[in-house]
Image (cartoon, rainbow over all chains, first blue to last red; front, side, top):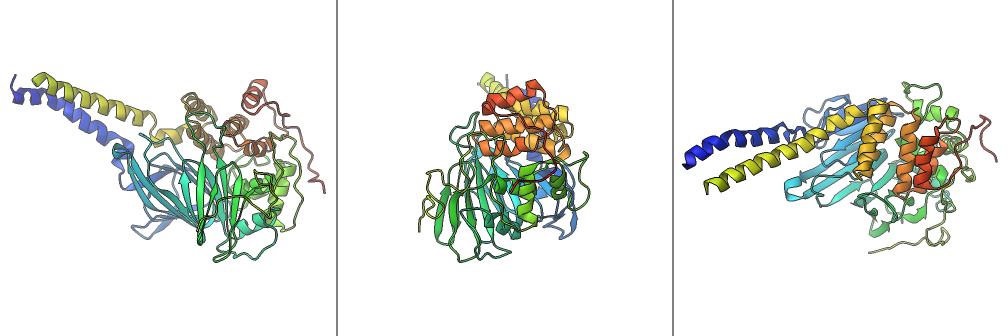
Length: 318
Length: 131
């Protein structure tokens, strides 16, 4: 059989192969970093290409350097091309400013800037398990990510939550720069195809590793030493969730007004939720209370090594 | 040699089809669409859990709760996954949000299997916290 004949027979197969690659939704959008996967309340995106700002649309592409802004009760989940889930909470300004994903070469590089507001980063199961640097930057911290789930908040809400943590207390913080970062997991006893997560947080000339669930770090302002690691209290964790997550609302239905998520907490979610909201809205310091559904709890404010907050453990590198 | 080339071409086509099929089965759009309804979102999350993709299931359940924050089953499964990811305190937070809700025995069994024996969320009063 001649080569021409072989190629003639193989053409439909090759055409199919090419078509199959092109038809893949992800590969067709090589200039997009991801898509809007879930939207709640007011979310706007300023296009880096056109400089125009429009409401976020479900399943619309998100491109490099697009600026995401959320309202007081706005929330957005972006599904990045490498299957990372990046959730943007209330009062946030965020942009993906670096994204390289090449599953064929098993490589990726991701950079996200958070100027203000709450966020969650959750590594996804990408094809081929690519490796490469993944970082999130706040005004005062750079977070290097190692396959994990972590959350953070920048600005006044970070200050309000941190002030009520026994490990932090009342300290001088900057309303624009203050950054609270919490590693959520996976922990060392994780199941499934996940490995224990960790993040390396660089603040100034210090690098501190968070390597256990709910270990937190607080950077109050530029030039100030970070505080931590410490274990965030249940109330602090709930307050952070109120900025990030959809919580049950009294009477059902999605919140349409700008304070739907927070106001909903006051009605339906119970004692711990009331305290959590109180931290954000009243500024009064409240004592931690015991959750009736505690599962293997450690005392709030205590490090995983049992040390007191004034002597937090953790690696400090110069 | 002709057979080898043909085999390579066929292999490429099959690989491309499988790869495309994988993408097509789990395209971002399909992941998002599934989360618009509680039943389809739960089904997807459970398939992901069965496939040991716990983080994928977490993302799915978060999307479901974006649309249906009142839904109990997704939040229970979310809490159980937090336990499986060794975030017991996070699970506590989620379970605490279900105070007063009706929880089926089968659904609660999923939580206890992952988190251990824990009290079911109880109905709460609206009198606020204790000082």
